[in-house]
Length: 239
Image (cartoon, rainbow, N blue to C red):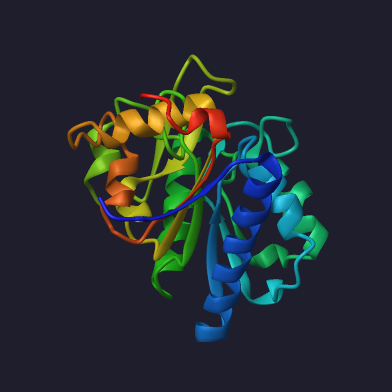
């Protein structure tokens, strides 16, 4: 698996480098094509990056944003990825509401998944997704694709699936699938901390198993950028 790697040793360096790389990728895409299709994830690691990104000068009127995943909760609840992304980034930069593509969690879950799949199909009809922000959970999940990942999320025509994990807050989720993520031209992985490093190294040393390690599908495209935040004491940890 080939990917570009940038390692940092402090929280400050991680935040700066992650934001710089993401800003540069958006800016270069805008310069090249005049528009950018950007996928955003929720979670504790990317939100500070979004806050910092909101201070950077970018042509947000030419950026279309989609959600990589969300919790099946109302968009005004604290667990909502949509709420977090809007308050940390999109509302701050005046991003056009009509250029935000997100699941409608007011709908019943099957209808929510169906409608979001249709929205992303429409998005892809205009071109491939340019950039997506991803992380990795302590169990190895990316987006809301929890191991063991269902076959329809690994190989199939669906762009969106519903998932469930009773061990996390808001256990019902809506997530894009691996076939969709493999179409992203520049996927970012932002990884931070001792536990994430152990999981990442374990995944790299494992045989290809997309049900257990969905990140392997994205890394297999050869286009991923990985930005890590490991302290100096963590560098020589064994997985």
